[in-house]
Length: 167
Image (tube, rainbow, N blue to C red; front, side):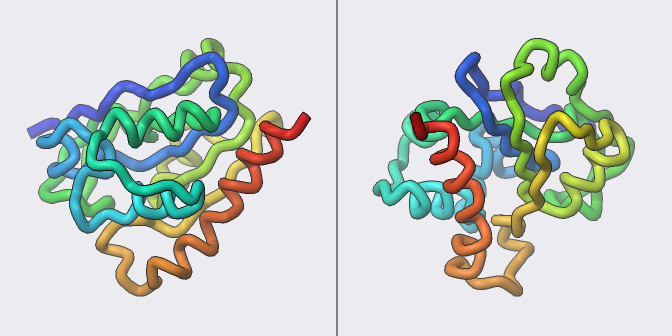
């Protein structure tokens, strides 16, 4: 069965784009990015911004938008059993050429896994107009790294956010 990713959450103020590979089956079922209870994405984000983690998905997304962060996935659709990136088959990338034409203000791209970076490199390619950074995966499959270590590595995101909010 073909899995279809979500539309991007983005606006004209977005300067940063966080890219996952493809939503997990649980995320697709719940219609919420990073919706698996063991995924640490939202915990990392809210810890970085020193805010309490809300239950409401719209509130979670609002924090990103308030901080000029867009969120999307490298892949538009794929096939594959389960939610592991290694099981992805017959993938189709999102249309980044169209996306960047509509949102040229986005200059920093953060990948939430090495696999997301690999797919992006294969289908889109890096350009010199943007900065690309790969972060440790927040997925429960990345159990070799403690949450505190992931948060430490993700602090670069907060530094970039602050660089856009400085006068």
